[in-house]
Image (cartoon, helix red, strand yellow):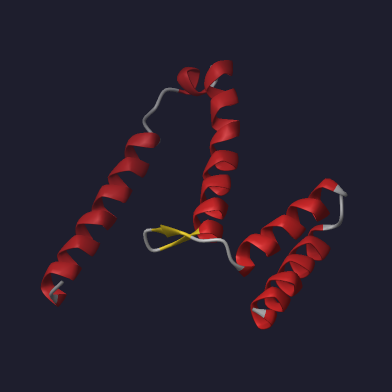
Length: 104
């Protein structure tokens, strides 16, 4: 992609994001107070983060792979189930992933 094209895409995306944010401020308060909408909004970050973790943990470019990242995810999940503090979850996942990578 040429630099002028890249700048055009960047500026267009920025304008589009600003427009979405501006339109969001115009939404009537009564629409946002809808209990159904609030329940759905509470689940959106969870689903997006879950999809990101799976995509980053199991996919390289267009291929599904099972490697050291999956071991780290498994240990993080086990630590979360055991109700470990968040720093312990992250540290145990990182150490496990590094060990499996080094041993492989």
